[in-house]
Amino acid sequence: MEFGSYARGLWNLLLSENQRRYAHDKKFLFYNDMAKLITELKQFDEFSWLRAFDSAAAQQVARDLDVALKNGIRKDRIQRFPKYKLSYKKKKQHGDSYRTINNSDCIRIKNGTISIPKVGQVSIRYHRKLPSAFKSVSISYHHGTWEASIVIEVKKEAPKETLGAIGGFDINSVHTLVSSSGWYVTNPKSLRNNEAKLKQLQRKLSQQQKGSNRWRNTKHRLQHVHLKIRRQRLDFGHQVSNTIAKCFDLVVFEDLNVKAMQQWNGRMTGDNLMGEIVDLTRYKMERYGGLIHNINRFAPSSKLCNNCGHSQTMDLKDRVFECMGCGHIDCRDWNSAKNIEAIGVKELMQAGTVCWALPTSQVKSSGKMKVRTLVRLDVESAKRDAA
Image 1 (cartoon, rainbow, N blue to C red):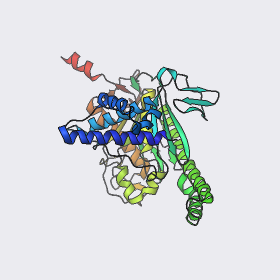
Image 2 (image 1 turned 180 degrees about the horizontal axis):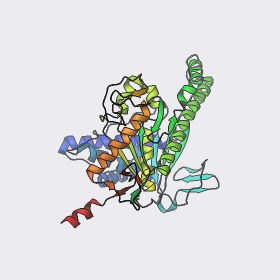
Image 3 (image 1 turned 60 degrees about the vertical axis):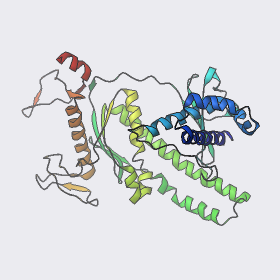
Image 4 (image 1 turned 30 degrees about the vertical axis):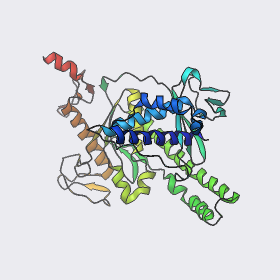
């Protein structure tokens, strides 16, 4: 499909024009100017490919560059100035994509096909029935297969005023997740299970003549294995994150520096969904009206005893926590998950986001009042009442 290269070429063209304009009069072209420029360029024969490109997709390229420029030139900017996109050959035949908008119901799914502007009807395989009205579609190329990511409007549940089930989660290399309630999620290790097949195909590909028919067939088989690994990881991440969002009202994670962890063990980190599973859980918690919180990555969650609070140093090879203060023995990961939950609840209470709710009935146990329910506070209304 040429539309992926059209989107990439339009991005580089508009970025080059922005750099030229800024060097001339210190001004950038934003969305309105770029949309006008695209319309003017369609009149020239040198840019006839713009007439073949979907106009709605071209406008989305201009919108994306507009956002990237504004984020890159702000004084308090976090993102860098936008860069040129690599060519199709340098991207090793994967990663091409473009996005188009569903204007006037121009994109439809009917009889097992999806209708895309300027492309036509394409057969599609999907695992659930989608509503007829959706906002946009992103077409991307991954490992020899074209995929359509459809954006639809989903009604969110109202934020929960009372939070019952609380869970702290420790993400580590041994297990994907360990919750404070004792739930252990084992890493499926999709890459390791398919590693022998990958090595076999890679060795076979290196011995064949590049560009031949057999080389293309082996390349397609190799891409299919990579696609299988990617889908297995994503399916596992969605299942785990959906279970967390449905079973817990308040979820606390540790803010891990995944990029730094990849420098010393990138294969393990990538195969364990250490960063992606937090992102998947975040939008699912927002959908179900729950609350998610990340504690500081430097919080001593692994060094503290969840029983007495004693702090001690531990090596990565030590998988059992033996407290030197009270003698409490616990699994290292489970002890860390309990500490993550306690630290997260403490930070939220100090910020005024949650507080302990009054019990409906006074039931005493061991001389203490046990209150296990949290309630969300409206900070702005509390300030007005105090004034």
